[in-house]
Image (tube, rainbow, N blue to C red):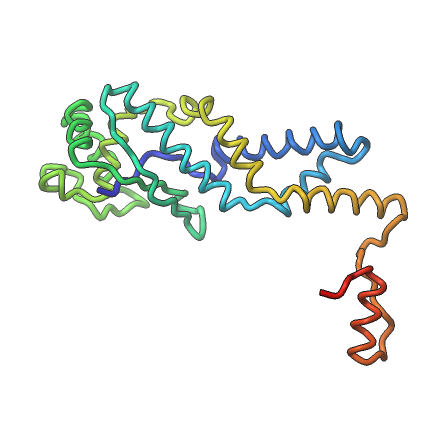
Length: 240
């Protein structure tokens, strides 16, 4: 069964702030330890240019699933084995945020439903799926109309997880266990060779040892063959 699990997303959340903090710390480390005198803010701009945030966020989402599974078992006593399925992101963050989907077993969700209590799930679903100003629900808020649990979709199963959280500050409770995975996800998805190359080039430009655009171009009026040859010579390029 596919289910959605509770997650704040990466837009202006504790998770985006943690990524930003990691980026700032790495920039400050490079500025103080390897490129003394070079501004950390400038290094951070270079890191930003060479970071693959989409891959980074997917890696963090996968680690989040494992942390949430552990937390849920410690809170409810029920082991719901989860397999990371996907993370979806909206085109605009006006009305929704990133969502994480997992694969779960029916028997585990039945056990969780029993542990949480049908009354609590009923109250949570009514709160989540009752239409109101600015929100039109596509679900009947009464779970008694939903049929057997085995027919519930990812949003209906999501209500069980939300009932299990019971208004706890989930993100803060998971953050400590995810600091290292977040650092690793960040570090693995930055092209550090490109970062160091760009920093060194910026230093060379400042010391007037390189041009602002490192590429050198031949004068106009050459034939294509002459232009290619001279471009290669000017930029110390070797023929393949």
